[in-house]
Image 1 (cartoon, helix red, strand yellow):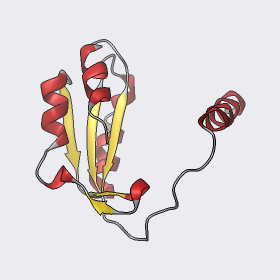
Image 2 (cartoon, rainbow, N blue to C red; image 1 turned 90 degrees about the vertical axis):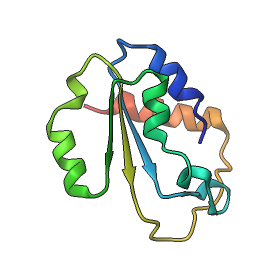
Image 3 (cartoon, one colour; image 1 turned 60 degrees about the horizontal axis):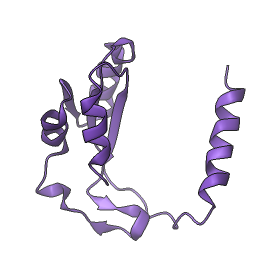
Image 4 (cartoon, rainbow, N blue to C red; image 1 turned 180 degrees about the horizontal axis):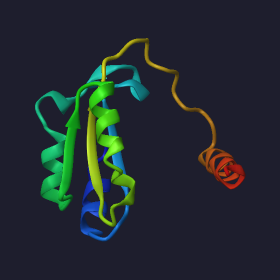
Length: 113
């Protein structure tokens, strides 16, 4: 929802990152309102911010083919816009403390093989 991340990552030309954006055209975290994404192409934003490797996928097969190309082995940022459909009501707002969420993610990552 905030393009500041695009600017920061695009400036880091040697950052091995795959940036997946799941774009369903709504702001689920705030109640499912339509977003301006219909009039703005985030792949163009990514390209303008310095990403050299930018793609859009529209279905699971395209995403699978893209991932088979091993984008995780690149030494530069890769941006992928995944067009998805909304299949459920928006989830409830996040009410947990951000420090607790961070600790939970850190613990999970530490336990991963």
